[in-house]
Each structure stands twice: as structure tokens, then as C-alpha cells.
Image (tube, rainbow, N blue to C red; front, side):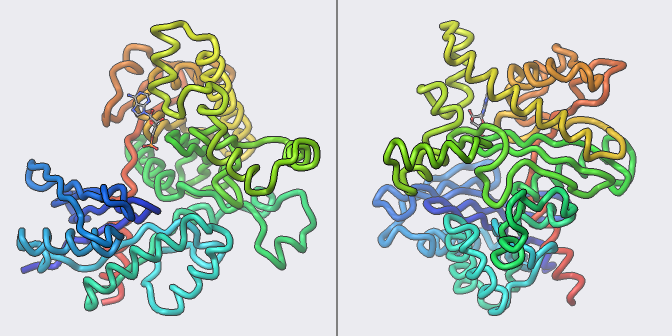
Amino acid sequence: MSKNAVLVINCGSSSLKFSLIEPNSSKVIISGVAERLLSAEAFLKTSYAGTKTSTRLNPPFDHQTAVDVIVAALYEHNLVEHLLAVGHRLVHGGESYSQPTVIIDAVKQRIKELAKLAPLHNPVNLIGVEAAEKAFADLPQVAVFDTAFHQSMPEKAFIYGIPYKLYQQHGIRRYGFHGTSHYFVGKQAAKLLHKPFRSTSVISAHLGNGCSVTAIDNGQSVDTSMGLTPLEGVVMGTRSGDVDPGIIFHLIQQLNYSATDVDKLLNKESGLLGISEMSNDCRTIEEAIINDEDARANLTMDIFCYRVAKTIASYMASLSHFDGLIFTGGIGENSNLVRSRIVNSLKLLNLELDETKNTEVRFGKSGLISKQGSNNCWVIATNEEQVIAEQTYQLISKDK
Ligand code: AMP
């Protein structure tokens, strides 16, 4: 039996997504998500051969429990013998990893050290790695880093305007995130253009609960809106994006906020949620605009869209030529209203939407939504799992 499938694991603090993918055919054999981990309500939803099942998890309701149930499902459907390797989404690879990497002890140690740059992400990602190692001791485990694609950024894009020694001594610089998604949609755009990726220059806007915009010049990330952490950049679901750092001192010195309070405010209470005082969910804001003509919801949407448009326009300074703009992520793939408001501010970049196409290309569809004569604007549904599966497969096949 041929070993041609990769198990992709994306481990969050209370969730674990998995998919078993055949990279050569892009076929997803089985997939699912465990949610509410570490609580008595923990469950695993699985989709296999058109059938969806939901299983309550047993104590201790943790990531290992979820992996054990996933392994049992793989055995039940005789899928284990297809498995070539396990590919993991790792958030922060710092400057150490610009490529997918086989996880050996030294790599795990480095990922732990890098947790000081991503305390919310790297430790939980490692829990997924260790659970998979226990379940599949004989299989190679591969890390694919969210930061890796952005390692091609030039110094002028990643060094902050603060003393250089903070970069040299403590690694304080811009790293960028969502790299796997930007890489995937950039490559898809190259296919649509019938050009090699290495000569394709696009701007991709990954707009979901987290949002980032990336300038891809001749196939390489040359600038991106997230920074040392995913807090920098455009306005997001609950994150503020860029603010005057002076606000932080004002909150602490004048309004008696603690550092923890400021962290919570900027990461969890700001963005769409903080401005609208309604929701972090773009759909709720859109409904309030359309149904109730709610002025605050309208303002929230305007701020969100204007910030994204400004970032896109600023990336003209980063590109050698411009092949088009890509929307992806939950908002980018689905909200014709957001796309319309963003592109309406970009007429000077010769970007104009065909509103019929803009309304049609939603809900997992991909396609061109710009008018004839305009620069290209596409919606491209992202697929980070496919990239992780492909890169894992390529690395393991090369090593053999
Ligand atoms: P993600 O983090 O990529 O899963 O994206 C989550 C965001 O996508 C949330 O703000 C959702 O409101 C938004 N979203 C999902 N579906 C739609 C839709 N049909 N219209 C507008 N926004 C949507």
C-alpha cells in the first residue's frame, strides 16, 4: 500500500484541527476539529467520506485525548498505512526557520526558546507535536512555520525605529505571520496569471479574525503588516492593529492600567469589537449596517476598510511591478461589502471591481472580481493545510 498521505495538525490553546491529505492530488481524506479542549464540553467533529460525526471526549479532555480519538478514527477507516508523515503548523520560527523542518529534539528546544516571542502560540503548538509523536513514534514530524515565508523581507522592512541593539541582543524585529496563507494565495495568483511565481508581484490581504496584508515581489514576501507579534498592522477582530505607542504610557501612567490590562485591551477588546461595541464578527457588523443602518457599525467598517486600503496603497513602495490584489481569509473570501469599500479607495491604483462578480465570488469560491481594464483583483480561498501537507511531503520525499 502506498504511503502518500500527510496528517496535518494545527494545535490551538483549546482547539486542534486535523486533516489527512494526499498532497499530490490535494485530496482531503478525513478532517475534523476538536474544540473546547480542557473543558468537560470537549468534543471532536470529524468529516469522512461525506459523513460528519461528533464525539464527546473523555477526561482529561486534553489535546492528547483528541489525538488518541483521531488515531482511533484513522485505524477504524484503515487509513494509518497511508501515512507518510505528520505536518504541524508552528507559529513562530524566528530567524531560525525559513523552510519546513523535520522536528528533532534540537528543533523542539529552539521552538521552546522562541516561545518568548510567541508565548500564546509556540507552547500549544508543541503540545500537538508531542501528542502526535506519542501516537506515531515511527513517523517523521515536520514543522511548517507561519513566519517562514516572511524571512525574505529586507532589513529596511523588518527593523523597527528603536535602538538596533534590541534587534541584535533580543531579536526584536518584525517577523510577520499568516505566511503559509500568503504564500498559498500568491502561488495561486501566479497560476491564474500563467506566470512563474518567481516573477509574480501581488499584494495579498488575509482578512479573518486576524488580518494581515503582504507585499509579494517576484514570489518573495518583501513586507507584511504584522510585526514582532500579530498585534501590529491593520485593525482586526479584537486586536487594535497599529496605535500610537504613547497610548500605552497614557493608559498606564494616567489611567492606572497595568501591563496585563493593556495587553488584554489591545489584543482582546479592541478592533471591530472595541470600536463597534457590538461584535468582533464581521457578519454581525454587516447585518447592523444593512438592516438597522447602525452608524457605529458603519464607522467600524469604514475604519477597518480604510486601514486595509492604506496599507495596500503603501505597498506600492515595496513592489517592482503590480500584478494584482488578492483577498483571502473568512472576511476576504466572503464579504463583498468589505472588498467593495476597500477597492473603492484604490481607484488611483487602477483597481475597480465588477460588482456582479464581487457578489458572486463568495463562500469558498475563487475568481477574478475586477472590471475589464482594471488591475487584477482576485478572491482566492486560502488552504494552509494543503501547503503544510505539500511541504511536509516534499521534505520527507527529498530526505529518503
Ligand atoms: P477566519 O479567522 O479566517 O475564520 O475569519 C473569521 C471572520 O470571517 C469573522 O469576522 C467572520 O465574521 C468572517 N466571515 C465569515 N463568513 C462571512 C460572511 N459570509 N460575510 C462576512 N464575513 C464573514
